[in-house]
Each structure stands twice: as C-alpha cells, then as structure tokens.
Length: 322
Image (cartoon, rainbow, N blue to C red; front, side, top):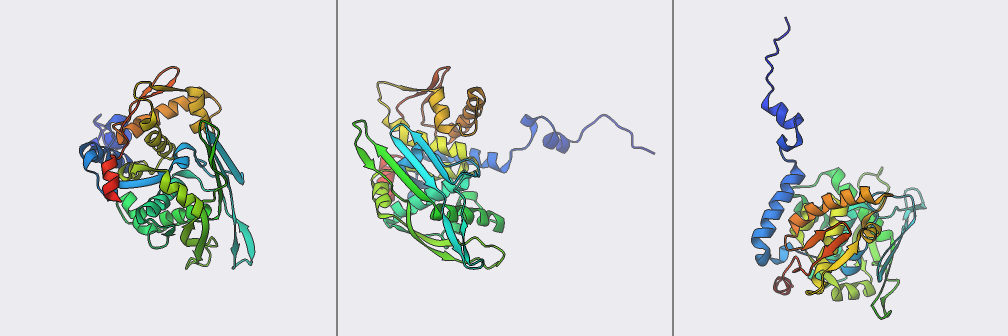
C-alpha cells in the first residue's frame, strides 16, 4: 500500500532543494564570509603571511577568462598594453615540439600572483614551483589539494612558463616605461610520474631581469585572504586587483567616473551586449567589496564613480612584512 502523503516536507529537502535563501551556504560562500570577517576585524593588524603582491600591469589588464583557440591575446587599458603569445615545448616522449595553450582562468591569475609574491618577499628572480605549489594551493583552499586540482594548477604553470608576455606602458607625457618584457626568462622542467601525462611541468621559473626590476618598483600589495576567497572567479580577481591599484591614486578632492563602455572594454570579455555584462559585473562587484571593505565605489547609470580609498594593505604592514 502506498505511503500516505501527509503534505509535510523534510527540513533537509527544503534546505537542499528549496528557495535559494533557505539553502545552506556552499564552501565558497563560507570562505567568502570567513575572509570578509577576518579582513574587516584585522585590517590594521595583517601580518606578512597575509600580504600578496602583483605587477601593476597585470592589475590593469587581464588574461582570458576561459580557454581560447587564439595563440595571441592582446589587451589594452589606457596607457597599459599587454600581449601574450602562447608557447611551445619539446615533448621527449613524442620526440617533437607541441603547442602549449594560453594561460587562462582564475588559476592562471593566482599563479601569477604567487610568482610575484614569492619574488618580492624573497627578493629573488628564482621561484621554486615544484616545492611551493602544493603548499600554495593548500593555503588558498584551506586543505590538501587533490591530484586533479594540482594537475590543473601545473597545467597553467606550464602555460605561463612557455608563454611570451609583452608589456608596454607609457605615462601621461607619452614616455615609455617598459616594452617587450617577457615574464619568465628560463625554467627547469620535470616529468610527471604518469607517462600518460605528456605535459611537462616547470619545477622552477626564473623571472626575466627586466620584469623583476619593474615588479620590485611597481608591485601592488594585495590581501592574500581576499585572493584566496576570490580564487574561484577570474572576473572577481580582476576587479579586486584593479581596485587595489586604482582607488589609492584617485584625487581625494575629485572622484573619477569610468563610463560603462570603458568598464566593458576592460572586463567584458565575451559579452556582446552592455546590459548583460553590466548585470554580471555589478553582481561580482558586490562580492569583491566584501573582501575590500575600504573601497569606495559608486555604481551609477553613467558608470562607476571611483573615490580615493585606502589600499587593502596598510603601508606600515608592507614595510614590516618585507
């Protein structure tokens, strides 16, 4: 005999399948909340382990959000230009050169931040990837990474190491500050234990001398807790990095308005219509602002109004961290 339906629903079913506002928070949501509380409560007391660094050019331009077929990626933001050319590597198993794709997505972004952070903190062009990658991913995720997760990070490390980055920036007077600067000048490869994995992982990379020199002069301090919290979202990472280097340079007496068309040109990869991009951007911006509570950004019908804001990491913390 069929069980009588008493019209009641289990609490568990309501939480898992019911309205979104009644569902339990996801691991990503919990990570965002924990990070936001930590940053808000301890902004002035951040220690050196909570400082990350990134080159100002990569705070103003962006890598692809997802895998693309193109072999060359170009982005422009005002006086800053970025060109990335996908590389090739020799596969001894196949005895031939193979194409390596362009770096893309959130993992490529946080690897770049990791390379810059290690170089600045250790004051060295040589960055150990093989021994630091697992510890780095564990710090980001708060747990030991799985094999597939590490494999994705290593794939992006290989893409970055084999790519040719060309950076070009000018000041308001038209004077070039840097041009055609590769990020990595050399790297050592190690072979996966599984012979079916043909991609060669870099065990360490050596940043090019020119890139390292400009990085030391133009490194943007970031809050590592925010980077970890936003690690799942490439757009969120791009917005956070951009605000971190841009807001502290806004005139304190004169807010700056960036029109929506310019915002889309900088962040709207893959969005043909402004209204769709704007909807996603504003939703993502709300998340980013939970990780950068000091940011003063005002969305309007015309665009984003940027107000002078304190950087995410106080200068005195940066000095003590180094």
